[in-house]
Length: 87
Image (cartoon, rainbow, N blue to C red; front, side):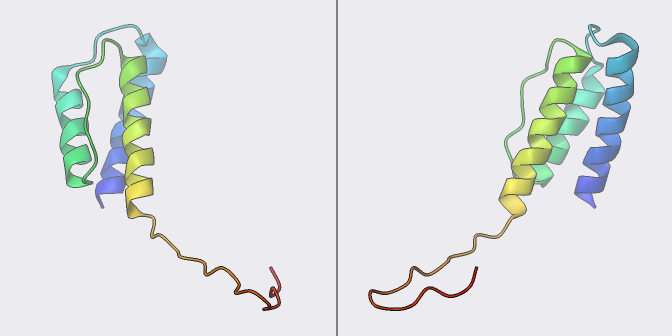
């Protein structure tokens, strides 16, 4: 649910970045992005100077959240003398 909201925010920020990417983003969008980062248990960011920079920050939050959610899989190493199985 939070990821969907982050993607929705990303769409809004992308639209603003395409319209006038060098404008300073409104503080409420930065606050919203940082609130979502906190809900996803990843680090937020300082207010960026432009909408283009805000778009990059939203993408970074999404990537960090994806890495945070991704389970770690332990692959056992073959023991000495054991045959390697099919890949």
